Length: 195
Image (cartoon, rainbow, N blue to C red; front, side, top):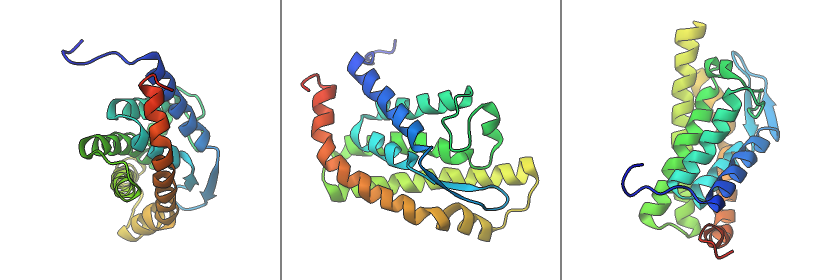
């Protein structure tokens, strides 16, 4: 074990597992947009990823999303359209990868700048949204162009991969920042063993 790193406590593992389960449950609360070449989904997964990033430390936030992704890739149907290793070949898998990077980055920002008020949490959420969409759009483009050999114009990327879902996802940023203001003290007490 690396110097200075400690093992996760039972409380941390439990809370991390809870967030992984919530992200998975959020996949079933969805609106499907029947687009070409690939349908897009608006889900509550992003809300729970936001909460993980705003309430947990960077290691625990990243682990929560990592466990969720691992479960989906081994075949547990926790993604919006199922699960399994073939999901890596779907153009929309980049958004799921974006969840992990965004959760870790948001938790890092909250820790580094000691963010706890609504305005700061909303800014951190917006940064997470930028990371999530950035990775998702790039992955979508690469899979469509290199693997599926489908022409993807910048208009398709802008409209299908961003404009159709970004407003709803920003609404989830507002909701998560508001919820996090109230939940942070309770989550900190639980993780510190005081709750």
